Amino acid sequence: MENGAKSWAFRGTQKLSAKQSKDSKLMVTIREALDKLMGNLNEDDDRSVIPLGHGDPSAFPCFRTTPVAEDAIVDAVRSSKFNCYSPAAGIPPARRAIAEYLSRDLPYKLSPDDVSVTLGCTQAIEIIITALACPGANILVPRPGYPLYEARAAFSNLEVRHFDLIPEKGWEVDLDSVEALTDDNTVAMVIISPGNPCGNVFTYQHLKKIAETARKLGIIVIADEVYSHLVFGNKQFVPMGEFGSIVPVLTVGSISKRWIVPGWRLGWIATNDPCGLLKQTGILDSIKKYLNISSDPATFIQGAIPKILENTTEEFFSNIINTMKEDADICYSKIKEIPGIACPQKPEGAMSAMVKLNLSLLEGINDDMDFCAKLAKEESVIVLPGSAVGMKNWIRITFAIEPVFLAEGLDRIKSFYERHAKKL
Image (cartoon, rainbow, N blue to C red):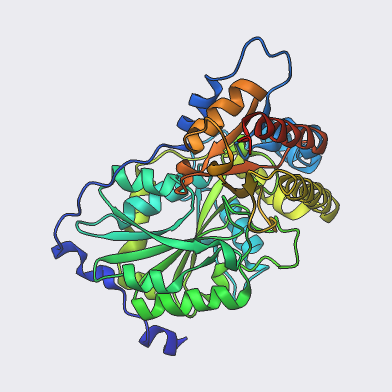
């Protein structure tokens, strides 16, 4: 660990004297894009709307959460022990349970002091971005990626620079582009694995290369692991915290996806830093200060977390994974039947896939947003335009719904293509 400490020097110590960064351009959020598409639905279409644009499968019976989680919430409410205000970082039993849960996958143990409980992963991202946003700083985020990072950075005047994920290499990080983008004002890079929006899963070897690159560049890693353990291909989930002795890692996560309860809004920030390097930067102090002025997750949900994390059965997780795998198989196989779109890699994790549009084969379709708007109007199918995640003329298909509805939705997309295909 001492070697890691000596070989990593955080660039952020230079930020306070740097020039104020230019205002970031605020991207269209996923919610904004989906709201626009919902406005294009044809009220005269009697068919059900098939939602393939948003990662919330909780409405479908095959993705109902475990009774263990529901009972834990009820028990917490009825106990009358959790009607109080929460400490800024979360109640101690919740922090302890999350630390123990995350430590199962790590070569070292996290303590409750390494964990802060947040209002879902969204607030975790907001807190970290705000803590890093000193004058002149910039942050590296993946393209395609999750647009909340750009949106939050824009509000904090934190410059965003995009590094590419390579479709032909399973959406691996283009580490050459990371090095080319980094300068003395770069403070962090964001890694999302399992990947939203691509459905990719990074290998141990690739994550280690990312960690070594970050150490070389003197930046920290923000690991977005909201889809942790939702893998169903040949790769295993590897937490970025595995490499915390190489480079400091701030991990954001939640119970939203693995337990299928996004509305419960329970997430966390975990500090994976066994060398203690982040204490030298002031980042952890900034996070604590932000927590002191922000809202907390409902205390009864925090009170339920120990039972949820400890008592959920492997059978529940296996059933979710098996359904996800069935959906991914359906999605990938049916996309191959449609000449106008292509998926470069079968999804191996998370809930979505990136699909490339071949507009040269389509008549009367201008771009990805036009494709999605007309698909909503003509077929009552909602998919997300790739522009919302940084990839123009691609679309993101979220496949975590009832398999029979997914198959129907993709069949409707095929009918849409055949209707708009150019006549040769």
